[in-house]
Amino acid sequence: MSPSVDTQPTNTVIVKRSPTAPVETDEIERLVRANGDSVVAEVTQVGPDDSGTYLGRGKLDELAAAVEDREAGRVVVDGELTPDQHHTVERAMPDETVVVDRYRLVLEIFESQAGTRRSQLQVELARLRYDLPRVIAAADEGILNQQTEKGSRIYDVQTRIDRLEGKLDELPDPADQFRKRRREEGFDLVTLAGYTNAGKSTLLHRLADEMSLEETATDREPGSEKDATAAVEDRLFETLETTTRRATLEGRPALVTDTVGFVDDLPHDLVESFSSTLSEAAAADVVVLVVDASDTLETFRERLSVSLEVLEAQDVDEERIVTVLNKAESLTDDERRRRYSTATDLVPEAAADPILASLLEGTNVDALRSAVRERFPEERATLRLPNTDDAMSLVSRAYDRTTVESIDYAGETVEIECRGRPSVLEKLRARAEAID
Ligand SMILES: Nc1nc2c(ncn2[C@@H]2O[C@H](COP(=O)(O)OP(=O)(O)OP(=O)(O)O)[C@@H](O)[C@H]2O)c(=O)[nH]1
Ligand SMILES: [Mg+2]
Image (cartoon, rainbow, N blue to C red; front, side):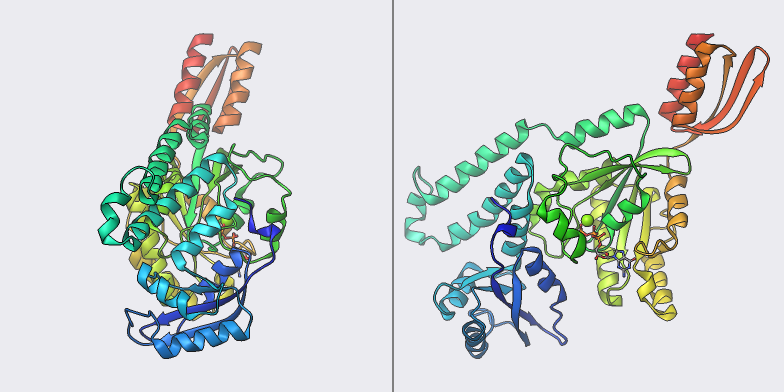
């Protein structure tokens, strides 16, 4: 499972069919590049399905000619091919041409970027689950019964799936332990969610405290070649493992977790396999949903709705959602107004008002910080302590973990008014009582 950075990019021809014009190929191109390959030609088609050959005979010939002409090794179809269609398209291409569909491509990207044992097992599991129905569909019906017996391909795949599920159950989820510990220490947890390329990692860098890089056990090794290229290129899935950084939001110590981006038509099993990234959202105090506002209005609307549905499916409370409409600097005033009103219609009433921002330029990041900060669970407390050296460590703890509104040294006692996480205040109160 070595990353594709070691190998030469493969010349790839993109195929896309769409019922209506125009046929958009930007995203599939980015996916191909994210997989380390280069796009040398595009073959597009506007029109209804041709179920047998996917593209229709004439178009298949055109595709074969493009592959030949550009010396391409791969064909990537932006859609899902049935096993039969896959076979037909591949047979129509020059020898040795590999044909993959969108699902398979996404699986490959995940596979090449999975950095930890856990995520490697997760991707392998997703791939086997994806392959199993195809192996079954491709098997001759007459021998299907035998195929499910020991020693057959179907039996092997199924056995491997069972074994991987068992292994994954046994592996502890490092993110789980991390969360639990941080909560106990009094941090507010923020999760960044949204489509890939929306700007989540850019936001993470904006919010993170400098010099306080706290990373989860699942972080990618720093300084790897992948890291270097990811920084300069407009790549998808730059973030495959979740990454957590410390941030201070108007005085509150928080941990911000970046997550794997959503992609349209992600194989369902893959989403499930990576549900740890979504469960980050469910466990967070606030979820910041980052949406690329520079997409066409239609794509923007569609992606915002899908994202909100995903969060809802994860039982994220509406009040905990803050939506950022990113890349606003690249829009005209009119386009901005439209994105904003579309978003206002879509986001739940209880959620924060959408925030137009440019995370790249840093515009409106303060408004975003406030919106997040407002949603942290909070109570007020008054702590009274004896004015002794012993009590001073508690005072500094209050400064660390809460927003201190006032502190009054009145002779024998110190009185602190503060706001903070209910659990933090509870602990401080208990300690204050213990000093008395
Ligand atoms: N024009 C513009 N580009 C931006 C802005 N914010 C981020 N970008 C660019 O959008 C691209 C994707 O940003 P990332 O922060 O890597 O996106 P992501 O959501 O983390 O993507 P994945 O990790 O792939 O899920 C990068 O090229 C950023 O420089 C912005 O405000 N304006
Ligand atoms: Mg990212």
